[in-house]
Length: 359
Image (cartoon, rainbow, N blue to C red):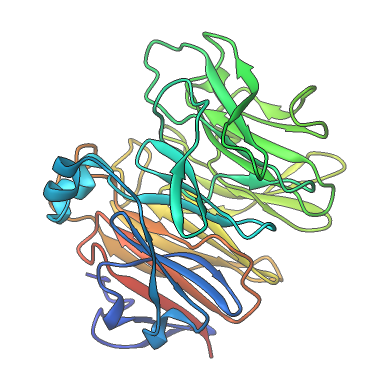
């Protein structure tokens, strides 16, 4: 439960935000959110609405084909979590198609049908909201695999209208464990790539030419281990994804690359979201050695730079690696309104949608 800060049954005002469960969305995830365009998922089916999700006015968009046995067993929530049988990225493209990563595949919704893309060297997962659309409309994403053997890891490129992925970049064997995400900087038009996990594998790199050349922003220890980035005109923001250090939210100066800590948080940060000048970071309940409390928490950074915890959710009783860490999932998209939807996984309020709204 929400440990005093938030009741799942009651609204709660925390600073300038109130948080409430959207009751009718249990079992759904808000995948994409922008004004007049919302896409939700439930298992392997996507839904669309022009009205905000809490109005419950969405209609079925498409069902992604999958093996019969997976569809059957994934009707049970724990089996769905065990198999990771879920959508992780939904990105509407300028040509009307929708790029999707689901389970260990990537595909396109075109003409009302889902088509799996060719060119993926091996099945792989992609972390949530970890795809980037560049200034030319191309989509980039990286392989997220256990890769205990430290083999090669790839960044893929998808060009709208194609039915095949290209390999944009290959990290050589022994250089990284896996790719956490690719992010587009709307101010410089660069692409940023985040990698982990051991100290020498933690790095933030960027490219201005689709990874033909790369520049290292920072590397070498867990202070450079991040899963997601947020951008402003003068700064880059991220939360550490550190197992063995106390995690901080950092503000990185674009010119000097000097890191300024905005404060410590209670665990590893996977996902983050920006609404105007308001920044949100979600810590993960993974019981890492440096984690101070095994909860998934929603943190807020105000335009003035103050860091505060809005609410937190306790990890459920199911095994953290088999049945997923306790996580808060934000929708992709460019929300300009004063509300934030988020979906919960692996906590006592698992598979529910909440909404934070500015008062």
